[in-house]
Amino acid sequence: MKQIHLLGLIPFIGMLGGLPFANKVTPYILGMPFLLFWIVLWVILSLVVMAIINFIDPANQGGGIQ
Image (cartoon, rainbow, N blue to C red; front, side, top):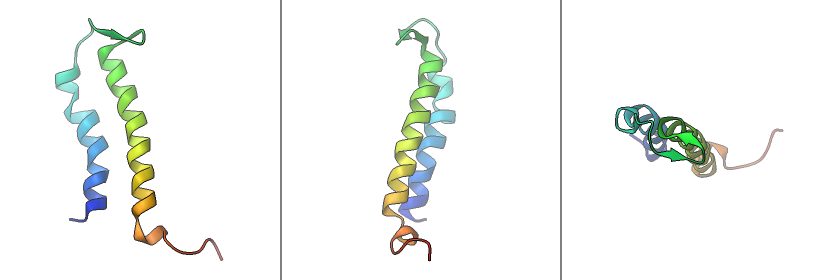
């Protein structure tokens, strides 16, 4: 499997695979319960990972729309 595909799995594993471990209410971070903070964090990290994938993808290298 290509490294790009493995990078695409990171948000999936982080958001869904980490939910059973992050299923807590008591620690509040930025005024949010920990589970909500975990989901928001992974949405932002997914954006970062997808931007990295877009940058290193060889199919995106080259000219613009012709």
